[in-house]
Image 1 (cartoon, rainbow, N blue to C red):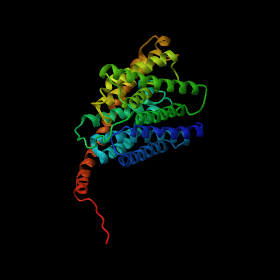
Image 2: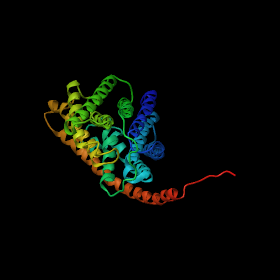
Image 3: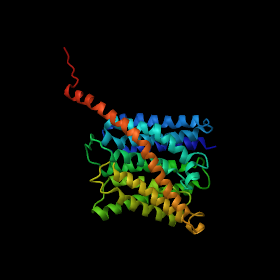
Image 4: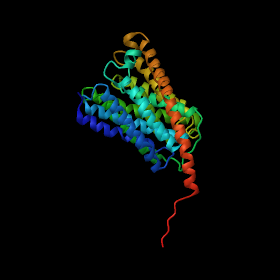
Length: 357
């Protein structure tokens, strides 16, 4: 059983992550709430119902943390889909993700040991980044490459102060998840927290360096992007990495993810092929590096590359599965976007007026 107080505290911290991401997205404040809130509620509820149907909820506080993370992911997916699918389409796609994809991937990655991923691939994934990062990246890759019309654009530039606040909130959410997924405070908790904090900071630094090398500038969006890349890379093996291995994983993953993302100025926030590839790259590189450098079961201990192959296979498997499951979500969201356009057009043509006698 988990520590209820720890799980509920970490669930609250996890909810800061979508708020931090919302600070750097090109939708208005009201639109963010209108899009993220219903998708988040649907995502959290769908995971809770799946857990109940799968044998009850023997540990309610642990399921509350998992539901908070699932809801946060669905909210983020919805917000990232808005620039290509519009507000109605983004909300529907996020809700569809929460209903169709999250309940499938979450138990397979973070269920009771041995998980489906561990059994099928033999992969290691301490913090479940295949569920928290790879599944959303695979789903949003579908949104990025299928036809859509960009309907929402940034209305104001992203400033360093706002980006720093957003990155800090995402980092706190990530650390809350890292500690909470351990379920209790034990001898590994301090190492997990320390590795997580240092790994996130190093990944941000590496991302900024990559931008400076390739495009001769660093952008505020890099702060949030770097935190997400660090979360993706370090989450695989946060308890298993000694300092040297941690530094190598964070720096190399941050550099690789930054290169895969592309120029942030030409690729604004939202669903894009570059953003999905950056997340996938971070998890791939982080998983491969962890398989080589992890204490006790890395290459030095085993002398084989079986775990490396398992990490790559697990990432690719979840990407493909999420992309396939995202297709019906995209189809329904595209219909919702088309139905919403005439309504928005009528409102612009006939604005509501009031008069007083």
